[in-house]
Image 1 (tube, rainbow, N blue to C red):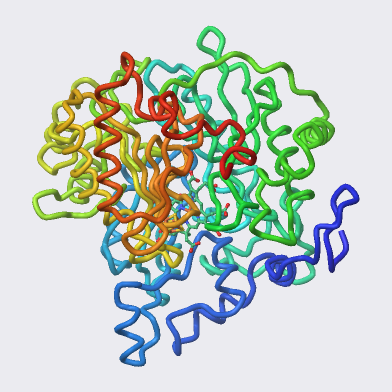
Image 2: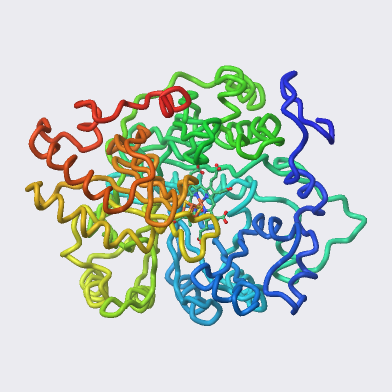
Length: 575
Ligand code: SRM
Ligand code: SF4
């Protein structure tokens, strides 16, 4: 590759973007972050460091609720840092949780722990002088934030709910191995955040897998255990769908090229489902994972970041060409895909029994925000659980949390703590359990409309509509709200997806399915929340009267022609 422009398979993609310069000049992601942290004049990090800290799992943010007021007072925005932990498969021990709970109080302005749609947690609102303390504290309990943002392999997901699955433990081990395999080798993180000894300047550092300029864009990996698609494989670049035989994990079907983000008004961007490349035996997992990552490393667009993700690389070079390159690099061929079926995505809120005879309590955490609310001290409740629980906790990709591996004689105490603190609430509707939103305001700099703060009351309104049209209590619609078209709340795999356009205005998408294998199509553009409720009222009225037996809302709107089905996103999504 020339230093000026990128050429892939003879095609000139254009001059390298500034993001590429920045990575190349960063001295393996160190930049001048250490100096910036010493600068007391501003609460921000400056220049290239704004982007470089992301490779270490942090974002510079400010509180948008008070931005205008501070500007009026001629103050700089209230800059804070958000940290996103690396937690493969969302597993965290009670001992770790006790630390995470404590540092949320000690080091963050909001005091909350935010569970994310990628099975981990974020701290929002850390002032610059506290940031190293947070990293050192997390490090003391074995947690880091390496590669959880920017052009890296992000937190690796794994189906969280282990019911009836003997392969869960094995799959979980693979998620850890994959996550570790793609960690950067250079020691920038340890030097900058943990004050580790600086590497001898004569030592030549290398990044054998990621390369000196890392990946062209973020890269997302999952392990899914059918029939559950709780990790939403079609949102991800690389997916391993577990195939088991007689209770043993024998290998994976590999799905490549999913992703949900788009940009309003730019049809070169679109959500895309992943393609099934075929089956691989389990012992070849890392070889194939590396082959996909390095193919995307070489061929992903480094000129235009909007078209840089694997999904666009596949559509640009062709699926067969991409797949053949992966086989060449892995030194082996894909076998024919093994049959599997995804049937659902939601977490089974409440108790379930694992194949190991242990008990698993899935707690519904609205928006994943763990905080002490009036009458619902969720954060205190989680701390009390952590003090007595002997298994582990698992954060789910639906922003919920599982108290995992509870012995029969511990069930009662766990349940009584959960109930007393509002972590178990029998009155929570199926609709609420199947609704999700991204963070959006006040911390997300890209938010165009509310999401997390809007969801609870919006769900109440939708509950009212379902009741009005006499849908049974166990009925629900997979409903997701995302504050901008980046799609962090995965609205582009929902039956009803709201995509933020402007304050109080959203694009309304309809027609995803229950198993998460279909992208919903835009039904109405840029309408107000009041108009959305009016639309929902008339659509649900029709659904309740005209549906065939057990027909899900997303299937219904397609069958009766309210929206067309999106088969191939690039072709059908904007048609
Ligand atoms: Fe996301 C950027 C929050 C999952 C697509 N995402 C952001 C940022 C960091 C805004 C920014 O760049 O400054 C948001 C921080 C908000 C805040 O204050 O916390 C943000 N994304 C989130 C989280 C916390 C949403 C949540 O409510 O849980 C999720 C964190 C996941 C994690 O733990 O790693 C989160 N983001 C997703 C997902 C869903 C998923 O991966 O399953 C997507 C869509 C799937 C995909 O990648 O296609 C997603 N986030 C984006 C994008 C668009 C990327 C693209 O392909 O163009 C951006 C913007 C960007 O990268 O330029 C973005
Ligand atoms: Fe922010 Fe947009 Fe992601 Fe929501 S979807 S968290 S508004 S970037």
